[in-house]
Image (tube, rainbow, N blue to C red):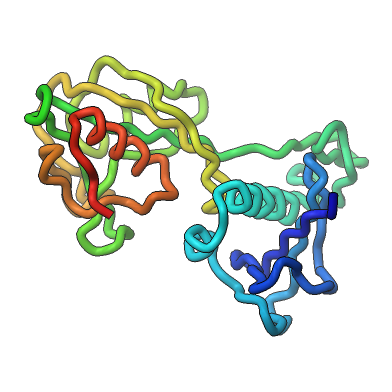
Length: 250
């Protein structure tokens, strides 16, 4: 079995038109736990003929899911390694440590790869085809797109506590009946998205203007433009619509 090589230039993945990437001189490289080789080339290096440099979002429709997930994993490892070259306590250069971590030879500080954990929650009310979803849009979304509520966990907080806090802060409502939906590594740049379903309990939507442009209740048969197919937000929305015997748009 031939070695899988994954090459990034900044946050852009090199995607060859053929089956193989060219040999390159990398400014940084590492071996992933599963054995694949991840490389980072200098920003000023010319992109070779027959290769496109694409963001992970742009590359998604051009790759099979397994290869895209592998590229996202490589990007997160490269980002972590590049950001943990020196000790955060005494500034000494770090050395390989236990497992896939690094250790400071001067003060003994050990660091290990980690994710920034976020929650995302799809809130609903009503029954059957009259069921409605609470969706919001951030100013960073594409025009017209609405999605589920998401936010990062805080230190000392459980996932469930993060859901209730984020919903209260961003929408001004309370929810109940949390159910785990699933999780997704999110390489933008190093997240883990943990998804929940919830039922509306009390309160009227009052979107936080510092975070959101708008928030509304949408019927399942009258949804706005939704996030693209690569996100767990879209997977939750598709599942909710399918459960009602309907179909989402493209």
